[in-house]
Image (cartoon, rainbow, N blue to C red; front, side, top):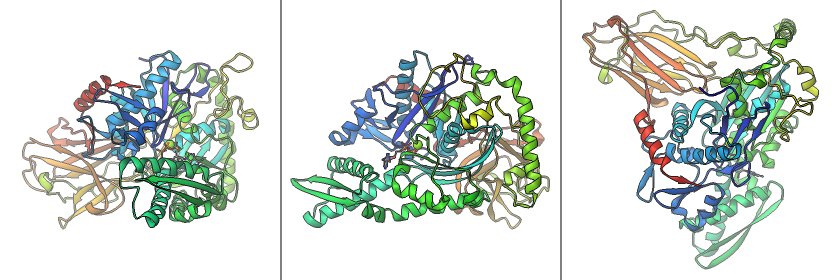
Length: 614
Ligand SMILES: Nc1ncnc2c1ncn2[C@@H]1O[C@H](COP(=O)(O)OP(=O)(O)OP(=O)(O)O)[C@@H](O)[C@H]1O
Ligand SMILES: [Mg+2]
């Protein structure tokens, strides 16, 4: 068992850049630089041969020289089924590739801190689905880490930002546009509780799409002149990509940039005005705007209701994104947020709040907090009494997750594609099992509002000037699901349909229990198909996994069967199917499609551990 002050590494495993942080023994969250001395590490890998690779800046240098042995943007393939890449005759799953990035981070962190690191909290985009989350956890295991939990990137950013604002009541919108993914999340800080109210996004929208637009534009200008396409060959393509990437970054501060193109002996310099770039990407910005509005609608809020807007992710440095948020929110986004570091810092903090409740930095204030917390709750209750006529904040506040589940009666499933129909009319209620802790207020919360005890986003100082520890308020993180879960059943007409069991925005952790029935006489096996996504038919949703129970004694039609969906705080799903009347529980634990078995993970771990990662 790890000691209370042993490191939990907070890892932001990004599409283009990764970062890591920890909460030091004085209670101060800080970024851990990589062995090259940088706070972020490019998520790029170059394979030298079958047994060795390099991760980070050195790998980026190889993109143009040896493009066939370089891999980047692997995060976009996480959770994909049957996806492998081959280098020097050895094939790698996305989990294994990501594990090599994590290995580099872990090794560098151990070198810098001088400690052996096992425990980690890894972040994922809020909009990642179960398979993508599962794959991320597997990557951690393969890298030799104990992934204590997975946390959503916007939530992590909000923790880092919100730490100085704990104690009050604020609503924030986190707008996170990174290299490959996009999330918008509305959160509420209330006392020491940080609750996700609504979320939406696109796991395939990010800076890379802006890069691609620019690259296509430049390649087309070149083609018009020389009737040759620099996208046709790997090395020139990579070279052009790098140049467009740099031009894009220049265009964030300058009105004009140039992209030199050099292909098959022909040269050309393509000028790009910022306005042209903005025209090329207008629809992408529109997607961002639409998503942000959808999230506010889901949260039942209007833009003026927000207290803060946080810009997270490197792509929010583009003026077009900042301008969009100023236009929508009618105010400037919060300052003092380092979009590259706040996710990793928040992950490190979450590691302490969730997994090191006895960390010394959390201890000293505990005793004095109760009175303050009570006072705060009273103030909020008074405020709420005054605001009683106003529309409700959000469904989760009313306990939507309690007693959820289909209103309709349960339905059974048959093995081999036959699905059952019988309605039992007895629906066990799902339960919000999160411990009901009330908001707690740190001792010096009032002072923190105006004069932060420390800034998690600012300069690292090991100890407070008075030689004491930085004291962390015990933040309670309450995340929520981002995709609804369902089950495929037969209705009374024996037509297949999807019944939603766990709605979107259900507070985590969560357990759904429902009773279904065998559809036919003498069934000896049953299959439960778990769906993710919105829709009533198989085509509209994704079947993310199956659980099969076989070898049952012949079951009469209508015999009850229990289905349990359990979501941990990291939104990774466990499913159990229990044949109730056999007395003993027969259980099948879901294997997510695209996921690896424990044996495969162990084997992959051995394989990658043998590899030298520089
Ligand atoms: N000044 C800038 N102007 C425009 N884009 C920028 C700037 N700085 C960084 N970016 C872009 O930000 C992206 C990287 O941001 P970040 O590190 O937050 O993403 P990530 O964590 O790798 O990705 P994700 O969170 O989507 O998995 C890249 O696409 C990069 O080109
Ligand atoms: Mg990111």
